[in-house]
Amino acid sequence: MSRPKLDSTAVSEKLASVPDWEVDAGETALTRHFKFANFSEAFGFMTRAALVAEKLDHHPEWKNVYRNVEVRLTTHDAGGLTGLDFDLATAMDRIAAGTGT
Ligand code: H2B
Image (cartoon, rainbow, N blue to C red; front, side, top):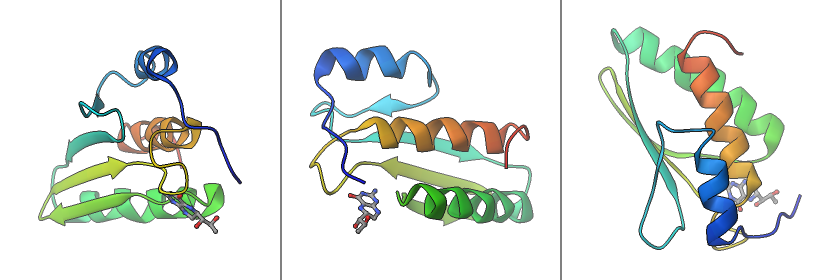
């Protein structure tokens, strides 16, 4: 699935719907730090997020240390941010909040 790279205006608009995420200066990636109660919760989050990522065919860059998960989202094919990054960010927010798969 190919998606167009979003321009600055579109990135700002979409960022409003995922306020816990940050955009880097070059607007090439979204990042968020998730902290869970323990390792099981963190890994459970990653497991659920991985299933959504497969469904979207859009995959996170991430790092897990104990109960922390650092996530970076970018669309490699587009060389920047696309709607898919925001879709996956929204899904991850829901999963972390316990209101999504
Ligand atoms: N994930 C991310 N984050 N960026 C991509 O450009 C991307 C992906 N491309 N997952 C997908 C897979 C592509 O390689 C396949 C062929 O659809």
